[in-house]
Length: 364
Image 1 (cartoon, rainbow, N blue to C red):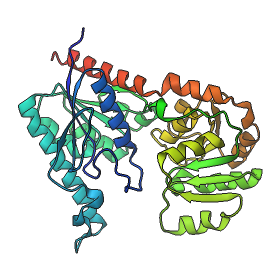
Image 2 (image 1 turned 60 degrees about the vertical axis):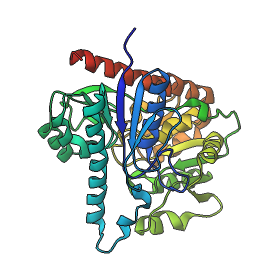
Image 3 (image 1 turned 90 degrees about the vertical axis):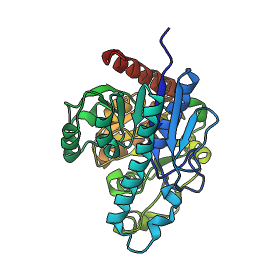
């Protein structure tokens, strides 16, 4: 029997956990990592999750930093804080949280340190021999690949969340690719007849919301848009003029409502315009039995099984054609695909394997 591990985890100084109800944004890395921490604890490992004041859990151990989470910290609204200063503040608060983790490591001697805020942590890695696992939630831009190489050391390992994410930096010290997983108990499978097309996510040009609108208009289908929007020309010029009887924007909804919208949709439209590393909404929709029609960028070919759980397309015309034949996709096949590839249990097991592999390699 393999020994149980002492694991330290941290994600952000921005939010406590559980994620507060008054936080209107989306923070997938924290959501995923909390699920991982719970899963590892249930397997018998001792997990300590480091977070800002207000963080708590009945399942794993919590170490709280003595500061108010940045999402409601008044330091961000003090005079002289411009966007540049905001970035510095977020970085410094994350570094403070991480410094507490590394201080605690000298006392408790964790077996594994698992980090999501990679950029803030790299300099600390030189101070310890403890294996450090980084989950790469963001794209690896060229500047980031150079920085990772500059800070490389034998005790640092990277986990990519898709194989496509590795392309800009194929030679990092990767331990594995581990897909994000979801707790399928939270995603009710729906057998209901499909009513509308759905877009769920941030209302940004790179997310291609305007292309989902065009596809809906082209096929004369209803489209429901859910997610946070941002002030600016994109919303005003490319989305707002088309809102009406068939194109509806609902803003942000709570998770239970979102699952209902997933389950009743004909398809989730995912017309991304960038190399997105994963795309959590795709597996959430498929878990509810809803197929995905997605543009061929980033992780899409790894997440959507073309012709079986949805369609992979290249433009609005192809998306419109896919919408017209979406009834050929079986809801049951979408659910089974997520159960096989993207369950929480599978993700937790894969991380556990990585930890043991790293410790064996390090002779620890």
